[in-house]
Length: 70
Image (tube, helix red, strand yellow):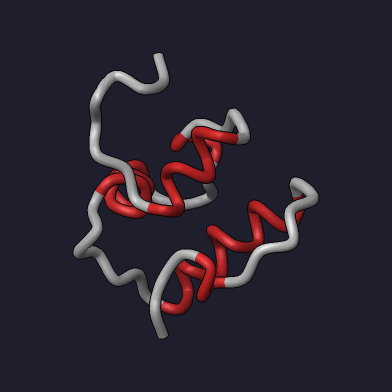
């Protein structure tokens, strides 16, 4: 299912690379779609915190600026 030509953000590519699904994220489905596929989307600090917290709980050493500019 991965790599079927859909546009991905850095965050979305990271999720794909590590085998996580958008539905695994602790955010609304529409928000997850925007996080993973919309380069123009600038998530709120709360959404960034939830997304980064999810990856950290999975054992990844990531920071918000790895995916989104400050």
